[in-house]
Image (cartoon, rainbow, N blue to C red; front, side, top):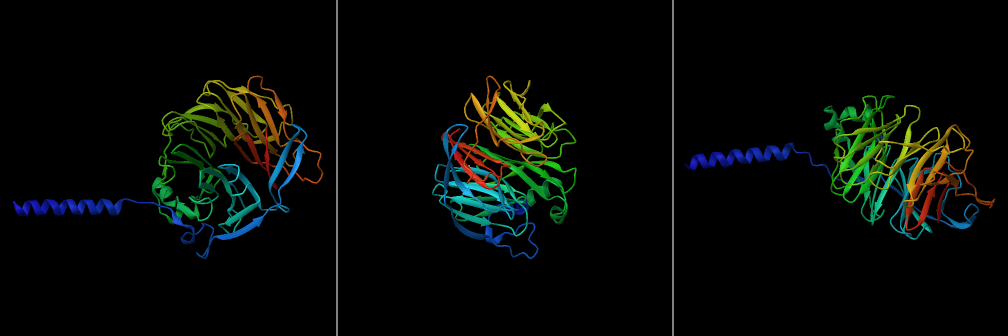
Length: 393
């Protein structure tokens, strides 16, 4: 009897040990211990720089309100920013490139701390912030996180997830399957990251999910996406279960089970879609290239196309609800030379559109090409190639 009991305990211990060894536990690592995918010598370190700004103000002649410039670049070149987020009116962050650049402020833009994680031209595309925690993603295998608003950074390497998803050798991830993450968004503890992988014209869509506020991540294997989808450009996280995505092929999908299965709600092969925003499960906008702007109030069963009555070749880069009556969207050039204003407002009921950003101040240089848009406490933050504007919409 004693021998049988001992043998049983021994087998249980072996099984437990084996399971523990096979289970992959993926965690964040301090940034000094991680290397960027583009790093060739394995010695990439975080570069930190502190920048003092001299905020400037001017009159927005479209609304007669004052606009503040919280951040400015004299020379942009490859140095630019794509996304902005604020946790309150003092603490904000902008992310972009080249070199995976992040700048944070804790005094409303008077001073900025820059962190640069790469010595190459790769860029960050998106940022999410809640209280003192920042997440940012882009043209990198890593999900970058700071839990003390930029003082220290850590990285979550998604190569292990992608390797398991593809059931391939890890060495092939860097050479062939390098991921690009275009957007990160949260709803309470649920977070979604969307993008694509594989360095070809036939790049494949990728979707990551967290249910514990970003502590751990998993790759979803969504069913229902069309076979030819190449990349997911944006996501609207309405609740833990209800999600919408748009793709670079011009399609929109809805999920009611947290991203496991998807239903096609809009198809447009004429224009890639860049941005999606829903104020609730039924009402939302999607927008993109070729001046595409459409609206639904029934969860995507029917869509209303909204003509801009501007150029037919504008790139709508971001859209944001202000309330249940109005939304705003940013506009960039599609074929070079922006022949429009950079910010417009749309009346949800009448579908009328008007410009809400203009100036006569010749000392303020607008290089336009805005990609960053964020709304907080009735303040609108607009980020173009050289300036970060704070305004009342």
